[in-house]
Image 1 (cartoon, rainbow, N blue to C red):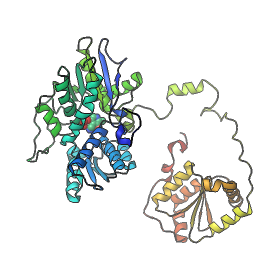
Image 2 (cartoon, helix red, strand yellow; image 1 turned 30 degrees about the vertical axis):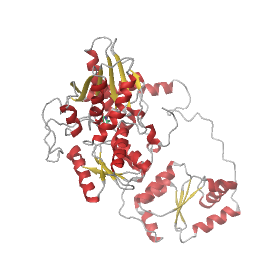
Image 3 (cartoon, rainbow, N blue to C red; image 1 turned 120 degrees about the horizontal axis):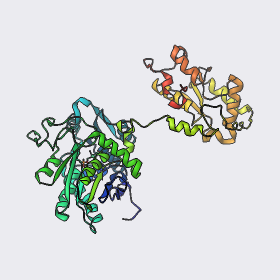
Image 4 (cartoon, rainbow, N blue to C red; image 1 turned 60 degrees about the vertical axis):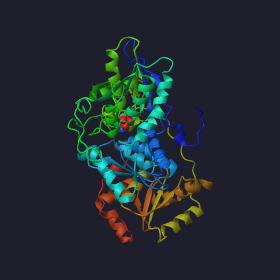
Length: 496
Ligand code: PMP
């Protein structure tokens, strides 16, 4: 594959296969396929591209038409990339209990995310997507039944695996299932082109949809009629929804599964961490879960057995989930001990850093004075903030003003515009001559100096700020209630 691409979509697939060295039992050749190398960091980039291009080919998706899908996140993120690149608006429905990183990423890529109640599980978000698609004439991806999902895996993932093991052969291929696209699409090609490869499917041990042998009830149109009786909520986001999807059921019916392996949530989390700490491979929870299944298999396999596990996504998507629950934000006892082992740069001592060089003294200029006088008496700009672009205190004030829907004029003293001829520095000097205050931000309402971040926060708390705004005839949302100090970044809160 060349390394120069016409657009981002050309980088989907061709993910690397990497040997597991320290976690593999002796004598077993254990490999993982890292789907985190896809552009948006998960296996679902394949599905997104496959489904959208298939719909384009069939004429089911028209230029500019809105795309909609129900997704636990990775599909939505993949679709958001594909739709952004191709210019389709995207709406995603997602149960509220999936990690917030995912929602924010989709929105960052321009998608809209409609949340559904956690209690209504995967089938709730699916039903919402169907409802919205029907009402608005949007293109519904139907990842759980769409053959284009499996087909893309047959054309890409499966071919990559067959090629990567063509010289040595592959004894076992291990995967989980969400939509079942990876499972069905890869397994059918392996059956044909690598018939000696055993196909092993993992699922959560507390939610054994396949292991139970119970059938999925379906409505006349084939859609799941109700949650599968064996479904229980589990830790492996992206695996085993509360129903057996059409694609998964087809894989079962076509005899593509040789063995089902149950995996516990604890093992999944543990192995995700072990992969990171001991192999340097940073992956999500279902990756740890698939490796857990692969290791179960490895322990009962003869020496020389060659096993490949699918690792579906990157670990960065799980910062707010149980995967990172034990990962500290503050320094641990051990880290504090390292800090104390040398004298400098410690929190428990006065600063040992040399004082910062004083800012070059620039005096207020007549131009700067005139600028202030004019701005602070401008009736069209009753609220003025003097700010610095990078300053966290200024950002916290901006957040408060945004909450209040308050229109204000910001003079960013360090912006490129005010850097010319040291104009910003001269204005800052004129400002401190006027207010006696040397720090930034500084806020004025109706020409009156209110103060900096703390003063504005405190006046908001006492109601004085709201009174000033009313007196100056400034519109704002007076119903907002927020502790303004919560808008500061955590590192600026007083240390306890
Ligand atoms: N792991 C994660 C993290 C996922 O997001 C998904 C897809 N929902 C899967 C595994 C399963 O992949 P597939 O849908 O192809 O079965």
